Length: 342
Ligand SMILES: [Zn+2]
Image 1 (spheres, rainbow, N blue to C red):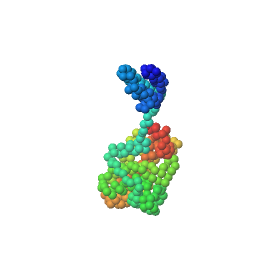
Image 2 (cartoon, rainbow, N blue to C red):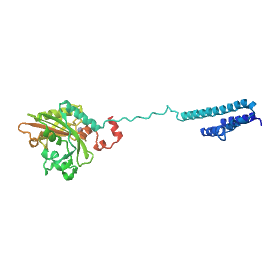
Image 3 (cartoon, rainbow, N blue to C red):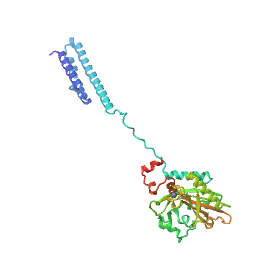
């Protein structure tokens, strides 16, 4: 067989093989088949060069090398084609459908309780009060005794809570202990509000074992009930954005004397009387003049100093402002409810 015929045969075989190679791994096999160092078909031709008649050797060698180049380039080109096809296929599969509806981006919002708490704080800051905070785990003295609620006092029954270390500590039942803590270290004049979480052993549509209060108090010489009425009325009218009537009704708290419950004209019926209010008034908070015993407990002379104190339930005010009927909605994490406050 003529040497050139062998070259031609291998060339034709390669052209057939390369056309049908449809995967990168097949190209690897072709590389071995034609260019492999031991058994490669083209390698075999190269190895045969020294046996060729010296007169023909130069031309023959050139022909074999051209074939080798053709095979090398052919494999490289086909490899590039296959990779390109792969990319195109992938692009086609992952084509973005611009007609699909977009995915909504969830936007968070401040919880209604936090929002109302901030609003309450803002109103009192505008009246010159400053914010103080106290611990949620309180001792018996600051939560009860210092506030004129001794061990056997019936008021303790209404403020049953969670006790820690056999009753030495407890989860505070109100924010009033901050009064004691502030007056222990600061001297009048004092105008302070104390927002925060409080705890009681209650759970129903209008009570939660954890809820929020804002305590407020002012102590100075010549503080009177008129100051208290002015501050509370101003606060409620600013908060409800209405010129609502405010009523002070005599009441009892161990740590104030005299004490009062504060009612506002019903925000639902405008004071006409309805299912929610009964006779046109809604109770919103408690207040009074700080009891002389409480002042004595923090070494202030009740003959010289006087003060008022009040406490508002943040949940209660939020429920009234937004007409919410069940306190548990605040803590269930139900987005249908919470999204309304965005
Ligand atoms: Zn009403």
